[in-house]
Length: 354
Image 1 (cartoon, rainbow, N blue to C red):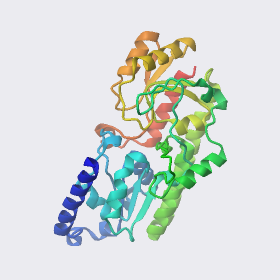
Image 2: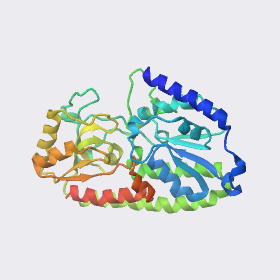
Image 3: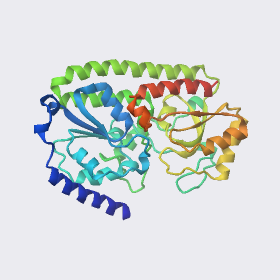
Image 4: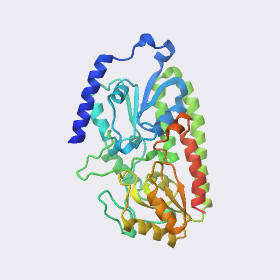
């Protein structure tokens, strides 16, 4: 209820602010700028995808401040106005974006292109693997549900299809049993290619005058993403193992599925927990020792405590695998890209799979 009241208060404030502002003052905007379409992305991956497709031909902004935690993000009235004034609004979908439903329901969206990334690709449910704690702090210890190596398959085509049918346009489950889907669809370069092509097609419709530019940029970018995908495949193929250990959340489900990787972690990707139980940490330490795993991972903006503990207890090197969910302020200002971050992940992965 507190969350709902917060959203209502934000909407009320935004409505008052919007009435006072009454839209953009076109008299103070150059003729060229006023012709640009406005695109608002909630987080970094789709922000960068649009940047690669459109360059300076659109007015592009990202709602999540660099360095901020996306799972606890609350929009400001100014954020809501940016969404209202946009021609294209792109969000991920899923539980972390539940606030968006309330925002959009208060707006006239008839002239907006609204895009949920989770509606563009096949989605899978959040997975609780052996040793991992669920959102209630319960540890999962049934290793019969956890497969190894290339057999790391979680959903066949039928299950993907069923998940998509249950997943409505707002990214939520309509069935009686509430299912939480993994939101980190962009971590697989193969998904990124699908998303980029879909966003490009939508931009071409919204802005036909620049369609040829978007198509040319998209073709070049897709080639780079395909090269990235091949590089990951080569790195996994050359490795002597296929198991990753995370002393952290695990937002790489789609990545692991794409390259036949097995994994153990403290929490699923969308968990808000940061401190694991002693039994979970002990399980991960034992797993590293049993399989002589050379590295333990953490993700960006982690406190790294768990990874430090595992590293100190096992001698495994502590490494960062970047999920690209968000970036630092310095990286944002320096123009770092999804492709650069994922290319760094290739070298890190090689080290962990040796």
